[in-house]
Each structure stands twice: as structure tokens, then as C-alpha cells.
Length: 89
Image (cartoon, rainbow, N blue to C red; front, side, top):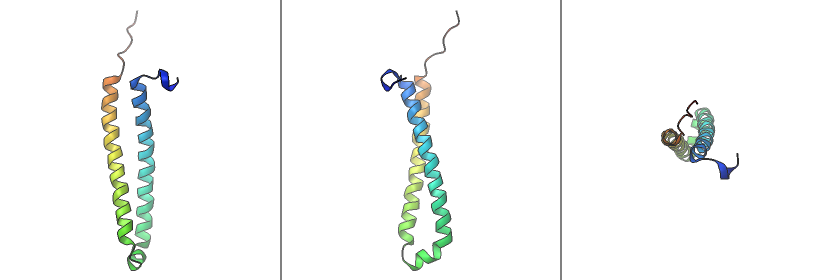
């Protein structure tokens, strides 16, 4: 089905799928960054770079939270856009 023939319901579902993929990668990024942070926390503090990493971790976490919120909102919208079930003859 081409983009021109998709219904609003299908478009919303496509966006939700993309946001869920982004959320997955954001979560993995936070976990990887946190693991690295725990390994090198002392060294980064000595180099006076811990504040920058803390900021990145906070911003990445905020992105993850925002993705979750938008996914929830779009899933609610998708329910309202879902076409009614076809009636049996």
C-alpha cells in the first residue's frame, strides 16, 4: 500500500512503530552509557568531564520518557481511528 492510499489509522500505526523502534534504541543507548559511566566515573571526575556525561544521560532519559508519552498518546488516537469491524453477510 502506498503512502497515498494509507488511512489515517495506518499512518498513526506506522508512526507508533517507528517511535517504538526509536525507544528501543534510546533505551539501549542509556544502558550502554550508564555501564560506561559506572566503569569510568572516577576517571571522568578527575578529568572534570563528569558533568557533561551526567547532562547527556539526563537528556537521553528525557528523550526516552518523551517517546513513551508520545507512543501512549498515539496509541489512544489509533483506537479512535480504527475502522469498525466489517459485518458478516
